[in-house]
View (cartoon, helix red, strand yellow):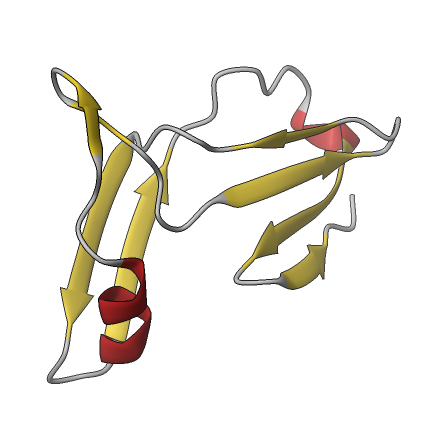
Length: 82
């Protein structure tokens, strides 16, 4: 976990309480469209002692979660089965 956090560095502030997302997540929809986080909204906590990371993110445009085909995080695509 430490190497992920060090590689990403500090969150870059782009406005009042607005920061670029160092750990973007992409939602791929069944119709071929996608949404990727670019502004960090949520919570990010690292626990170096237990080598754990908790990231909670919100998405603005998710209309129908049944239409999600996959989620991509750290270059790993996770298929979603409905």
